[in-house]
Length: 108
Image 1 (spheres, rainbow, N blue to C red):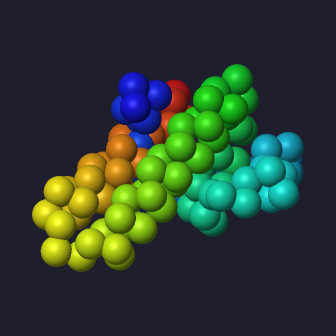
Image 2 (image 1 turned 90 degrees about the horizontal axis):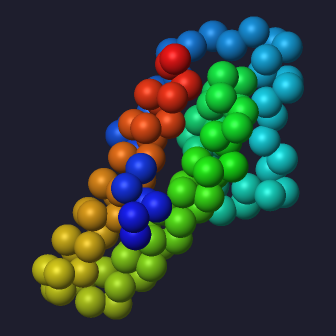
């Protein structure tokens, strides 16, 4: 869980990366099947500015997405379980923290 202390806050790409940097930082979509389009965009932006951190953030995003998936399954099975609903909120907050940290690194 400590690795997930880095997560998502509604990432918006307001940068306009140049074509060369964007092509060099394209994420292999076969490796990121568990990542959504926003995750891939974030990793591409991060790769162009901090390539050494890309693998770490990809791993953290995969873990956060797995946590969200598991928490959603639990809520679907027990919709009246307040603890399960809080766990799902926590999972999304974890992903938000990963996004915040990645955006912070990519803006340097």
